[in-house]
Image 1 (tube, rainbow, N blue to C red):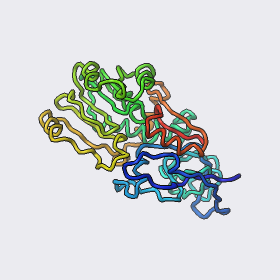
Image 2 (tube, rainbow, N blue to C red):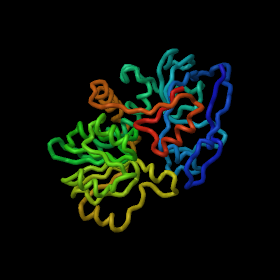
Image 3 (cartoon, rainbow, N blue to C red):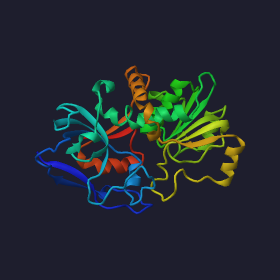
Image 4 (tube, helix red, strand yellow):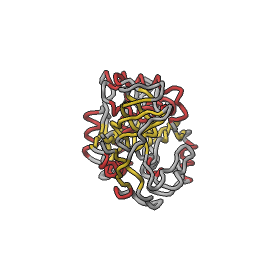
Length: 341
């Protein structure tokens, strides 16, 4: 059976929007024999995520992220099944995941870079290990818990930007479960607004492409905003209450621009934050991995019980990876963008 892989064809300019032509599909061959410690895996699902835009640049701008190399196989979150193993930790049939899964239909990987997962945690939805019961879910849960300071009974309001994306859609639901009386989502289409309110239990949703966000926020948040879970690196609302918390989880609006992260604030905004004692903190989930196992188990339970609903946009076939990535960067996905191989 032929093996296909996706390589980086060329780098977009620093400020350029990626297009599918930046990626190239190739046929490749695998080494016939496994070395000690090697595992042959069949890829089931691959993940495309906003942070990958940084990996298309020669300099990712972050010390914990390596750039992709031109004409080399691209990698990211993946889940698959072990076909054969010369690593004592894995046997044929094990379901495994990795943050550095090569974008190919089959691959030989070092067992040390793989993590075994229990399909029952995801009720058989193996793609959830790339999203809701993976790094994305962890970012949402731990971001809200570690930086949001949500207190049951405190009548708090949470606003989530990028609310219909993989992380935002879960963060908003966690805010609600943890005790926020109002959760308002900001997203980019009427369809997304409908999903947030009707399917995910958000109190209200604002379409930033068609509505005046400050005016709508005033309307939707009569008691001001206590927690702002920011996935896009957007403007901070002047509706933030004293002692409020801004959680910086991403900056999709800035990924195609050559700017530092977190995006610098105007002098005016800085003064407002200081005056109102509002914290604005970056959240990097990799710093909280000691809490990961308990958090993943909790996410699994909430999903199984129906307290958290998972949204996914699934594209079929490795040949559509470039299209799926570029669509996700423009907001074409609701929930996690997944490629089924």
